[in-house]
Length: 327
Image (tube, rainbow, N blue to C red):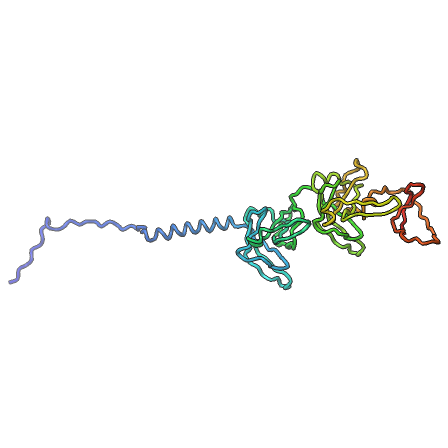
């Protein structure tokens, strides 16, 4: 006979133990990627917020420029970097794309100028020698306009005078260029007080218009009755009064120059109209002549030779200059 198994006794039944509910545990292997993602996102947002403006500058050539290397500097402080250089659609120019620091945003205005800094000799001075070792860079001259701009036309030569230099600009008109050039000095009582900024041939081809700059505080001496004249080279003249020799300085002999003086030192202030132009006379004698209110023109006929008589020669009456030859 088989034996029937006995039921276990109550005290022999093991006590049930409740198993605790499992909770999600963040393992270290997941913690590191999450922290890295947070840091990366923070840096990306910061980089986006700190990102400066992107501009384009058009030059005739890309000589000396390299994407990713050429810097943009203001007063020898780096404010930007060239990102790319492409050829314009007309194949006549190159377009430089650059990124500037965020702090430069307010200075990107209509009259801000950019140019490539290279070694250059102009107006008796040598600039850009540092680029012989460090390579070319793009210079910037901050304008004063309130109109923002992102696409600029670069200059082929650096501006003679920066926008932040105090002083006044004037226009001068002459029959010809003479020996003047960009950067030629301007003198007041034989002291250099300014420079020639630029010059252009008039549209009718009958003269040359100069843009001149006189630094402060000397610009206050330029008034509506101020006379400008060519002070270039040596002014040598022979007339009834004898031999006359006049020059401003050795620099003006080599580079050319302009001088000015006011007929009436207490005259009115200079014209504020930027289109107003002063006449640039050939020499000091012609410039300082007082305008005559009443004049008469005479035609004289000489039977003998008039060799040596030129336009501008004085008409002398008992030692007094009463006129001049006009034709």
